Image (cartoon, rainbow, N blue to C red):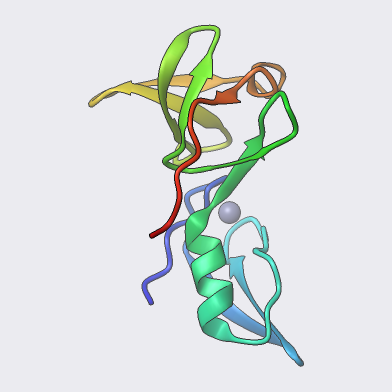
Length: 112
Ligand SMILES: [Zn+2]
């Protein structure tokens, strides 16, 4: 499975082992994904990319459709040092940590 880049710094990520656990870690900033027994689960969890909690405390992931005081869009986290909402193909609104807690999930996206 190809690993996506780190959601916080854009660095390359690699699979790590801490017996019996497997997890994915960013080579650049050291951010780690959740631990699992299998590498495949660890990689898939990393690629789902948790970004932050919304104002109701619900976990938000890259690609979730979200609502924010600036409008609606898709949650992204590929910029250096932050999170944002993509509102058009080429426009990303950067959010500060304070603003990030006002984000709200519009509808739940389910993996089929
Ligand atoms: Zn990183």
